[in-house]
Length: 84
Image (cartoon, rainbow, N blue to C red; front, side, top):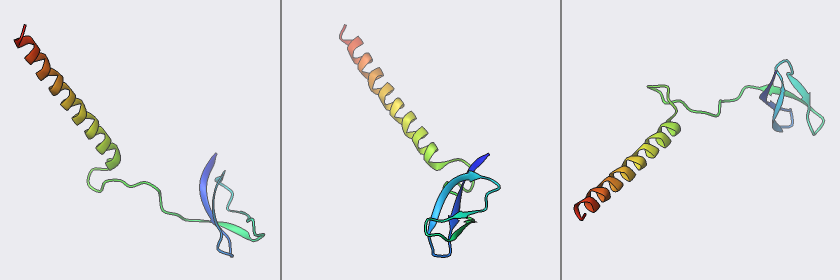
């Protein structure tokens, strides 16, 4: 199974590669051996609930927009029914 790993060589070149889990080094473009390094994950979890803040924000905005749309159309329908 292949995974994304960060590699760094002695000359300071850093690269990210999709390699098999067993691969711990490869020959860098400069000719030096690049070894696998530890790196921070690229996502952030909310501390207290474990949910993804950006997903929650999109969910909340979508539902608030839907609520506003429904309120606007319901009030227009009530007004038009008064004039019939």
